[in-house]
Image (cartoon, rainbow, N blue to C red; front, top):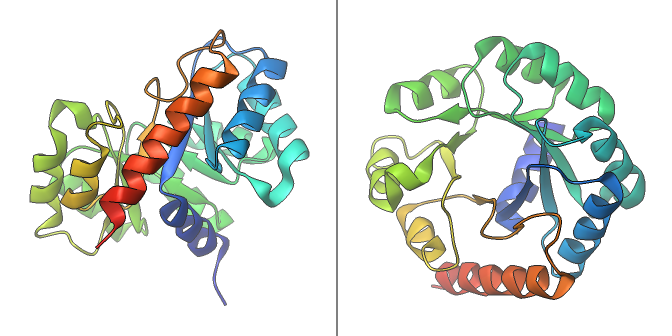
Length: 215
């Protein structure tokens, strides 16, 4: 029987786009952004823990959307933060770093955790600890060519590049082997962003993703 880790990882890879919200977002505004993302077909959302009221926002998002949107917590750097995020209702967690205590706890709790890695050694360490997928961060420093180079010997690890992914380069990341991508300000620009702008950005990035995935 598939685990929650397997099911949620499959969902992340199937959807392909992780909308990342970070900053000073009042919870009501964040819920409005989530409504727009859902309407635009972006169904995986990550609220970073250094976002204002992040834990309350995660709880409210889970209450509002149930299983219609996969809601996760980002910037989960420690085991204690992981526990707080899961208690709030996070269905997956994402980190900028590789903390093996957090990985161990996530495995024990059957929660998808995407640790941040930058080198082949970190990727292999995460994989041996049980992580089938990792977050390549910051990806804009090295770009799609680096991802392709990592994937050559580490083709049994799923990489999710995050940082600087845009509609213009998402195709290059797909062709380099990205399993999914994390999207920050290229998608959600801030609390004052209009619904129309967010919808347009979501449609543009989704179109670029789908085009790059076609044989």
